[in-house]
Length: 520
Image (cartoon, rainbow, N blue to C red; front, side, top):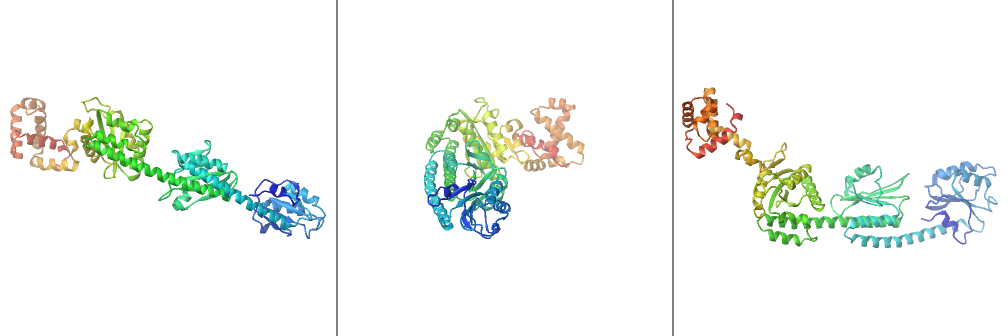
């Protein structure tokens, strides 16, 4: 906007500077002969007056102080009418209290000063509009770069001569220019105020640190982030237009980035599906047609001799956060993995190269352990499948699915390898296992003599644990061998089945694991 210096420098007005004015922009030029015109001012004006009606001993000090408090930039005093020249008392008051002061010679009408200001204002607006068009074109070119968001932010900061940041919905800085740019201290308050308005809200404030404006970024749904602009002075019309263009381009970049990520995830999901069906070569070809060639971290699991599959599930936000973290970890050289949404879209499937020794299947491997912790930190439940040769990745995926089914809020991680040490009973649902044990052992549990029931169950446990050998069982129980024989016969009578049956031995062994939890 025009300044007092622009008015003083205009030929034909012959204005004479008496007290230099601040370099603040002038919002308007107005005329008033009131003793106190401040009630009719908004600030930022140049006030023209001839001092009409003021006595020679007028209190110019109070007049200058009131105008300065009202935000008047300068006073233009018309000499040659009420006063032959600018009153010395007014000059002293303006030097002490402000505002600026200049003399308007008798031949120059006040309307000429006002008209000149309007012409300057229009010229500034035309220049600002032309400059805005140039800046908008530069912003559009910046938006075509691979680093569109960062490039747009840098160019906008240059165009405005201020600081520009993009923050996520929680206020964390995503990018900034210049590098030292810091978020305004009250940014969290501003974001809380704007959040309910979605993409419709915006905020602009002026304070001791300059002007700050906050704009939501995005094209659909909730904002993907916010553009924060800090400048020494409030933005002019052309600058506001430039910011509006930047907001639109950043929204488009965010939408384009989201679409590209969705496309890449679909390709990775397809590749993962092919891999789990045993077609590694086709999986590699699918990865090769991604918009960006897959890096070694994406291909590594498909080239490993052994792999392990993990499945994760949880709240929508947890799953999305986990997937983003896995993608970032893969890009920055973390665990060698291939991650994609599950086919039903409810969870994640992750394939990692296994660190266990070939052929053993023991241990989770460094890659799997790293991914487990990342998924758990994101708030997901995790099922880790067993390590298998690459061509049997589908088998690991099945065990991972079963492992995920056995996770609980209190135990969000289940490794299928643990089944090897705890036995098949560990994969049974607790309620179902107890029901099975109750039904099988009912004839024993309901014996009137509880001591007899306890002795029979202990004998059955030791007998099965010693592969049906009576003498070692008797020694373990501290009884005679014939006692063991009689107890086994009693059990066969109660159960109506023979211990010679492999099925009974298997069923009874599983049931005895839960016998201590059953009502007697």
